[in-house]
Amino acid sequence: MKKLLVTTGGGDCPGLNAVIRGIVKRASREDDWEVWGSYEALNGLMEEPTRLIKLEEKVVSGIHVLGGTIIGTTNKGNPMSLSEKQPDGSIKKISRIPWIVDRMKSLGFSAVINIGGDGSQAISQAMFEAGMPVVGVPKTIDNDLNSTDFTFGFQTAVQTATDSFDRLVTTASSHHRVMIMEVMGRNAGWIALYTAIAGGAEICLIPEIPYDLEKVVERIKSRYNNGRGFVNIVIAEGAYAKEGSITSSVGEEGRHGIRLGGVCFTLSQQLKDAGIEADIRETVLGHTQRGGTPVAFDRVIASVFGVKAMELVLEEKFGQLVVLQNNDYTSVPIKDAISAYHVVNPSDTLVQAAKGLGISFGD
Image (tube, rainbow, N blue to C red; front, side):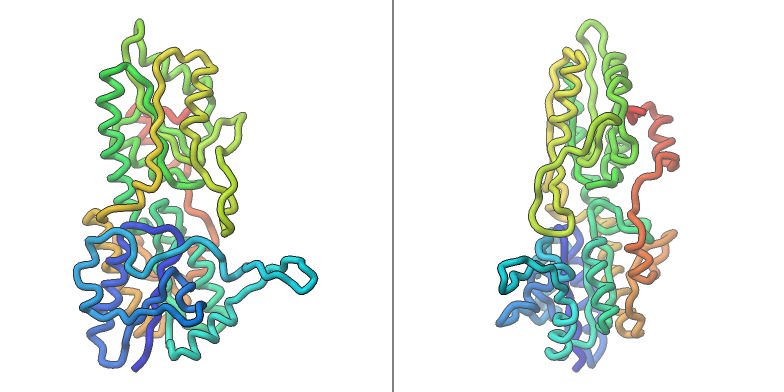
């Protein structure tokens, strides 16, 4: 039997289980393949003893409706740059990729399907260059991976954000408040942009368009008449003012190094300092956008991604990432997908449409 290893890395994301199920169900149609999962990305493979699980059809039955991932995930400890203490007490960065590839081969694995975002796919490319047959599957709620129209998990995050935004609209109108809702996305404003359009926001602030505070204040004031009125704002966690900086704190060891979050409170204070007298309230959605049952759209593309990834393995087309382009499921070299960061273009049709709907970006 040929052995396939499946890993899920980075932040958790609705649809991960649907990909795993798609891989296993497609592999079950072959007589000479068995599928294994490594717990918590590559950690399960690297530990002694290993923490691996054989993924059979009975194990993945019905998991496509579940959030999270049955094999766990982690965004800590990049194996391409691990800290190792030297005899003299100094710390040296080393890559464990060659060791990981040797470990996989010694355990009899013929190929790997790595499910993850840009950081995880950089690891995929490193393993591929080290001689391991690898296929990648794009995963992130941020939709910031290049070469694919959508990553699975994004639509669920947008739906969660939109549902929350709808609830804030009614309370904002009842109390004549300014409601600021912060969504995830890191340095890409896709979740904020889609939510603002779907929810009918008055203001949408994203990293790609640093906002002019005076323009934001002007828009808010135009919505009030003798203290009557309300404003709903969607702000991406990576947004910042033209004369300001990104709101962040020190994060865990890993590829990001910083933890984004709290920009809604930064904006709230800026508005108060600028003379906005209306009652301002802040809501941080945080990890609610990552959890829960994936919407139908994400279940479909995740399931198809899983099937297509397994078929790439069967066709021995390695070093490839499964993608969705122009409503067609195809693949591109992993190195091309991680060569650029997929962000919102200010001249994008969606941005212009949002402006046509009267949404202000503070520019």
